[in-house]
Image (cartoon, rainbow over all chains, first blue to last red):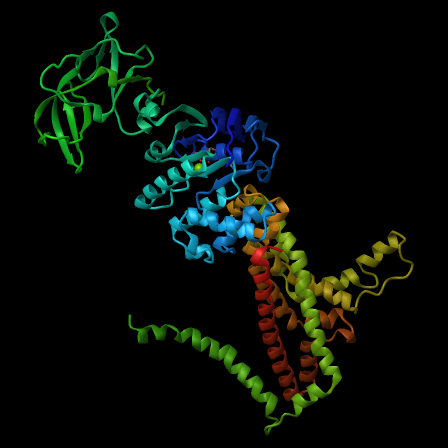
Length: 356
Length: 277
Ligand SMILES: Nc1ncnc2c1ncn2[C@@H]1O[C@H](COP(=O)(O)OP(=O)(O)O)[C@@H](O)[C@H]1O
Ligand SMILES: [Mg+2]
């Protein structure tokens, strides 16, 4: 088992006038599972290609382990990679696909067979060695690609949107398997996705990307609970954004809700939006101590089994939505009902408004 | 739609094939064995005279040589084009297509201008002082080969190129990142995946070579006679039945060789695909 740390240091990549990566900086610890999350065109693939050696950085340094890899060709970098379209060799059997990296490294005979079979068994495809890739389902191909990428025990594994071609159910199943593989293999994983749910499920840390830069990097919980910008707050999960106005003695008034908030962490002249996650807002009896509460009218009730999603308009005219996770004793409210809603100021995060 | 109804859709294509391929072939075959009564004399003559066997063997040999040369030149050219940026690829393909708009006759005459006693090559040699006497290049086997390769090369380039554009570049990247040096990625992934298209091109070039007539007639000597030239000669002397027998032989040899080449290609493919070269 081998594992290595890696780092991007001020990496810039330009394609003519397009800046695909802009002074990209990231340190990844050995064995860490880091996800690059961002919309299409934010530079995820470019970052991965520079790490794999398919593209050269215009500026900056990339290190794997304790050495700079910018001058190494892909075959010398010793990283595993799973491609979005699997990229299994269509002319080789499953066995030969998985054996490919070992053959190039001079492994032969019984040792080769044993390792290939072991890798195929790890991904539950022990019986499929003789098949051609075209005879496999999407999920099976994915597993073969994974076995092929890790069979030579690379210290770093790269995965570029590996699950995006699978249907939802299979995707969720593969996410759990990847988590299990990671625990088993222990190598450092860089995983690219544009699916925020996937990023939250899999990662030790998520790097939210925007225009070739990291907008925020942190644990899934940090990213979700303490987004550092409107961009991150809106990209990860769903949220309500209210406008803040400075009031007397460090207090803030919330536009549209017509309420005053006590001084709140992070609120300042630039962070003038308040992000409140829908599950943090709930019906309150009266003015509960420490709660920010306001009147609202329900405009939509969407029943989703384990939770109910409500849309409402505050008495001040702000649309908002919240979720009720139907714990014991909760009842379903009706559309049109007048209610009082509230949230804990500690659950609300001031963020800077995006400059559009 | 019922199956019966669907069958009607085959009618136009079937009629076309019967009218332009099956019927003439049948006619050809009939003419070769009825003169006017049933006879095998023409085929016997073909088999018993070494001149004719020589011509058959030469036709196959020249065609194979042309097909192999076109492949050896065409594959790298297609590879090079495939590496270029998109817009330059279009330009290069266009340049390669241009000669195909000219008739084979004109392209063959161009070779006479180049290879003749006072042709381009001899003038150059004289100018450079490399030869005192003009070299005899016309009416040699080399001239025939050069011209046939030049005429048929675009077909092999385009066929190889088409096969190469089908190869997903991520497969090459995958090979590289899994540990393959550029040469190894080429031998283990790119070459096997372009093999089928390349063999198809080789067979097409071979097939077209087998029927070549103008080029050996104008650029070759007696020693370069191919089956098609024999046929023309016999037709001119109104030996219809013997010409028909030659036609049948050409058809059978061509089809037989195509089958053999495809078989050899499959064997080669199986070896190459197994674990690389
Ligand atoms: N080979 C290339 N040539 C020109 N521009 C490119 C190339 N590759 C990527 N880009 C540009 O760089 C930016 C980042 O692309 P990419 O890394 O593929 O994003 P992502 O993987 O996040 O969708 C995009 O604007 C894209 O158009
Ligand atoms: Mg991408």
